[in-house]
Image (cartoon, rainbow, N blue to C red; front, side, top):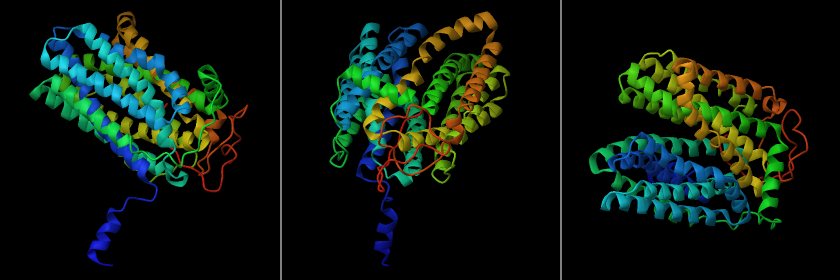
Length: 444
């Protein structure tokens, strides 16, 4: 073999990384890189406009509220219309809203209501984009290699998140938040253009449903008919809420009082991001057979950061804890998406992903709002120990579900409706063809 031919062989993408998968991964990397910096830029834009911490919270809530309100509708729409068109339309909305936000910051002093409105438009776009994106990704990879493809996709996403946060923070300091918001708008434009080239000719046509409410009911039946699915969604609705409150409220306070300020806390968060990249890399090689059992065991370390803050431990120990948590959480994430890939029919992927996303974010705003009163009532250490305890309790409860302990990895996809009861030990019976479609899904 000639040197040139050997080089081409090495550069050739794996058989499981087809055109759609490659486009989706590249587009997700671009948007995640821009969005992480934009989160920092939005907060500093509010502060530079004369706002305070409460105003920053209002702008953040303005994004979360429409995300919660429209997620289920977005899932139904994405299972009814071509998913790539929903994704491109959502990217266009995000491009316009972030571009206008950046222009307001660059051209003058933006008002709080303007920033809240534009941020709400971005959250609305995300509500329609996320279920469509997960459904599209689940349909883009061969089933046998879905776990590896999923891990590579998540590694790209997490790497972009770490790099985007670091780059965004630096750029906000150098050029100001307006230009960072404008760069995020440009990233949405690039990602939307990439997604416009997705090839959907080989995807199965979805039969028209009986209306939006009927589609939502059908999606709910798909979720409620699988104890492992609704059990883990419920688990993460609570776990995400308490961990989100600990990270957003208690973490900075502990860092300011005991760890030396925002620098060490930022380092700890960076270690968590590095851990997620390492965990995704691990899952490109490791394929646990009882994927949900192993994945759920790896959720227990999610309680460690709250416990470490409650003590509080030295910065070096906190960084090690955050890194370990990132690794184990990615083991769960890849296992979860692999389970969705092999168990959920293709025509219901976006609706199931919407219920998954809804469960993940619905309780975060009230938990964050209650973090302050909980600290006043019980004290900060007790509140943090409570966060850690809740993670342990809900994770242990999920392990009581037989399907979580027994569902096993396989390569064939399910094409029929959700069963009335859970699957037998070993997973659901295969109902797909000998040449199944691969898929990747979302995290609970």
